[in-house]
Image (cartoon, rainbow, N blue to C red; front, top):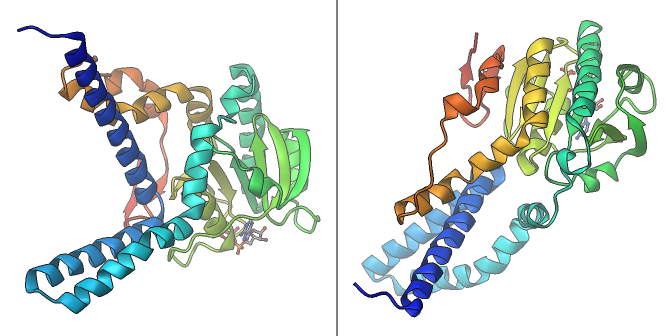
Amino acid sequence: MDFSINDVWIWLQLLLDILAVSTVLYSGLRIIRNNSRTIQIFKGILVVILIKLLALALGLHALNWLIDTFLNWGVVAVLILFQPEIRSMLEKVGKTTAIFSQNVSVSQISGMVDELVESCSAMSRTKTGALITIQMTQSLQDYIETGITMDAEVSSELLGTIFQYGTPMHDGAVIIQGVKIACAAAYFPPTARDLPTRYGARHRAAVGISEITDSITIIVSEETGAISVAMRGQLTQYSPDALHRFLMNKLAAPEEEAAFSMEPVLNTARKVGFNIPRRDLHQEKPRDERIKPLEVDDLYNAGGKDRHE
Ligand SMILES: Nc1ncnc2c1ncn2[C@@H]1O[C@H](COP(=O)(O)OP(=O)(O)OP(=O)(O)O)[C@@H](O)[C@H]1O
């Protein structure tokens, strides 16, 4: 069989097209899955499309016209409704203000994690409420501006002082950028979801920021002293040791995560004939096995509660 350069180019274009479309669809579905608001809007759009199909099948012209008009305006409505998600997606594409791109060494991260865990452990013992968010790849600049700007090394003493009850900065969240405290007393949009009643405003704020950014938020409960982490809309309770392992795993080995998020795209490439070796999850992510959450609340499956011993 003869292949001209033109044929090769057409195949390459096709392949690029498939890769681009699957990346866009995958990112869109991830945003929808990770955010309760987008799930609701997505369900609403599906219902409207189903009604339109029904109207077409039954020949209901007036209803069909109404839905067409609604869908035409729908593009504008979706752009307005999804504005925060679109903005955060574009920020993600254009910006890599991640902890890892700030010339931060693993030993600096390790030092920061030691201080962070020590202070959370101390605040857990004294039942001092705390809310600490670590910026990952998406910028938290908008939220930093809602608080009191700082530029200080993370230290157990400083965090303890900030969250001491009655001090001017104890209300709100501390945001960590790189290995530094960028601000205190920041305000986060709380989640719109119905959380179990044992979770109050602090936990709602933590889940809220974890739904709209890829940040990691640590919460120390004033009521119980429990330490939890909010990430991608999920709240997980950790012991101080497990928290240390979790943070080191997330902050000191990010490139594995990034590579794994490309898996669906790589799968498409494999399907069209590219010989890309598969990664062995168990062989390459041994550190995850050491993470032992005490309790996992999967907030997306209301009431779902797994125990990991
Ligand atoms: N939207 C928000 N953004 C940032 N911080 C917030 C926000 N809402 C509440 N907080 C913080 O949470 C504190 C109130 O927490 P509340 O007791 O209602 O929460 P909780 O989830 O029940 O936690 P705890 O278990 O510590 O009682 C406030 O004093 C404030 O510091």
